[in-house]
Image 1 (cartoon, rainbow, N blue to C red):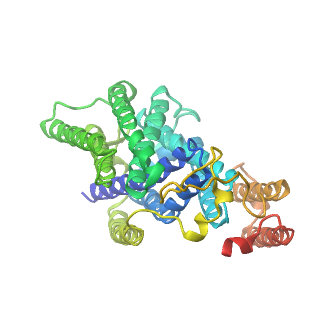
Image 2 (image 1 turned 135 degrees about the horizontal axis):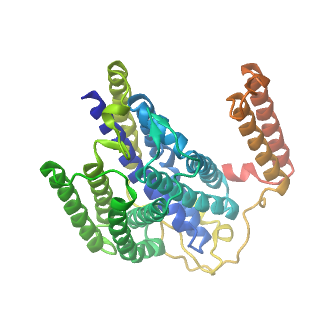
Image 3 (image 1 turned 90 degrees about the vertical axis):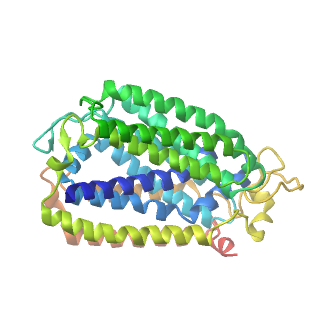
Length: 434
């Protein structure tokens, strides 16, 4: 029975990631459609306090999957390598954009665009991965035997669009809870159309699953159909609460209801498919690791989960209430003014001053700085690929000492180039400190 406990831990971690990182992915996508630089800056600051803690859950889920269900790990990863690698690269870019935008004295539109687009790419790739797995992956003896693009199915595309809609809904609910002013009103108006979109996507995906999934669903079992029916009923109730709550107080109600919809939807999917994890026939029992590994996993990962949950709760408590821009930041109206003219912050009512559009003090980094960083990053990825024998038979070209020397050299070049750029005035680090 240890394997089912491990399966429950994996589902809990995935559910926590879907909810927590889902809302900040949704806020990132919503920032693409907001014309106010001031609000975009506020969106970034709103999630900069918790995005890294939210993403801890996907790391826990990956570790638990690798240790607890290695058969699933060995089948799924080769089957969805391409969307998974793109997703991870987008997560890295997104994290860099959040931190660099937060450190900038004004709003950097380049980093804002990276933040929004990478959030969209992460959402779509997650849906492609989920849809590819649900569509079935060819395997034999716990080893993937399919092709490179087996994940690319019509159902996986529908899953990508549906998951992006879910993230947008969670982002709108979070904005209603945490903001005031124009951002608050926009979130309230977006909530109900997004609820309708998510409901339609849920029905389409549920009906399409029976055609896309090669396994035979056993809804003739009383326990299964009862659990599935209860999960669907809970999702409908939470959906109705969210519908009523958008645009009304208390502002926390829509987000709590959306969380209920997501949890109920995940439980309905598990009730329909368990114990099959990878269609058509890879079950929890067949994919599980030995008893000793399961016990180690339950102690190790199970002990880490309360710690991760504790610092999530601590972050929510510290940053509870409505988000407000610091006075020093809101005073920089020229750097944070909408292209429309007068604008407002995410956490304050609309100001009356009208200021022209201008860039943050110090200007955007020059093209040479960006190109240099991109080339260094690509070179690091290439070195890592060679060292892991990705290209076959070339891992002996570079050993651990070579990797260490390269990393230290690249770090020195990066720091030196940034110091030179700062001294040349390409970006003003002292302004960010003030």
